[in-house]
Image (cartoon, rainbow over all chains, first blue to last red; front, side, top):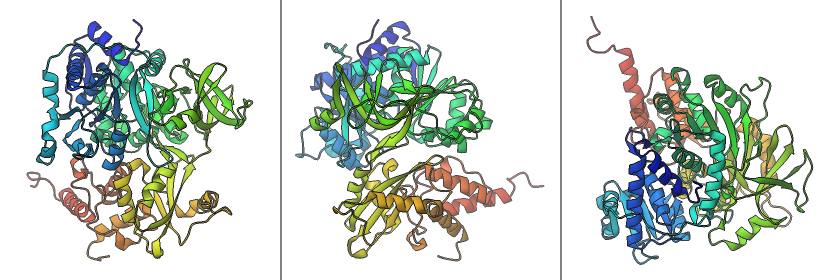
Length: 536
Length: 96
């Protein structure tokens, strides 16, 4: 069967191997393929009965767990697109996301009820489904709220709607330069093309045990969930707490005998540094795939010493090209004298690539240019952002191309090497960060007069974010206060590592913030001022 | 800084030099929330745990470092005091 829709994968596996475990959570509770499919169908039929129609968006604000996966499939089976929001992010940001994409329903826990618009402010949702107990603090929402178990009780059959590859599967929000996140729309056709390619690379089978480490609002999760469930493998859901605890996580990988691991390099470096890997037998792992940021070679080499057997893949791809568009296989023994990070490799077989200069001309071997991607995995555009969609996509030779904005160099031996960005975007722990969004958050502090945020990259320590500030009447908040303030406005991965206070910030002759001067100051001071034991 | 709380000061110095460069010590008080405030993210918390284990020769487990128990310098110092005492006195029944 050729799948057209992500839910087709689950349905086919539920027919083929209904009694095999599809999901196993951190505590060891599991759900079979048959049961996962049945629960997702019941949820879909509940949502449809409440008025969720094909083409709608439904927010998911749940911690990683079995219910969250049921929610994704329930939403897609109802013909709607899921919009995963970071369960731990500041309320204001998640609210902004749910309001921007006009969700018609929300599936969350009692904590996520805070994300709902207050009475009279914004549209009323047609369904709010809550996992777990509803606390007293959400009593005001109670009339609208349905418990997750009750939503599954209806016992309705499959929701019937035409499944078209052009239907939206999910919208994932990425940091936006104007200060508000923007939603990348991914269709079922986009996602299926990626899952098919990924399956040909990983060759999963029913006896594979996949990690689900990345959160669902990070699109690397698409690489765990759908290839695993397409092939009848089991998906081992790693709770947020376990994910942050490398010692327990290393034990988990060994105890569950996981075979396919996907995460950011940061997560692997934590395992390496704090996981006591030498005391755990993780030899069942046959594939380690990482992406979302640079993996410093000395750490990758150290990981390979602990885990020599698996195949290592470096995956690259913006959310707009559905998880991965180029990949490179790391050699089984990294040469001792190699210091340069491994390149992002070659185009996946479902993608085409072009490297163009600013004028749209192809650049030659070894020259820097912007990487453009074409193929069935290129997204449908940004939700309600026609101008930004037009700017990101263009037609050429009868195909639609996405400009990644990433500067790369090509050579036939290693493929593409990531060089950097021209704009203010950085990638950290797999997340894209527009430095302008951090500046906008800092400007909300009443004592901040000017804010300029720059990033500093280091081959060994990764990316540092530094905020330069000048304050009203020179009355600067303490760094503790600034950190605390940022935590209320931004996800942790966007919080600056360092704050530098100045009487005034440098300007260019046209009065604009002079980022080059600030970066220059950092380059000079970085060797002494940023402590060696600092944040990686 | 209070000279009677050397453990707090050792922790303060580590956190300031590692995660809060340029901050003055007085702004990191013994009761300043660390994890719940965003001063220490999960990565930084692990760094602090590793520092404590090495510096004080004790082992911390998962429950010790939960957000509720590992959020203020004074609480962390109390925890270190308890663990150090456990280490130096043999468990019940082991004494002759």
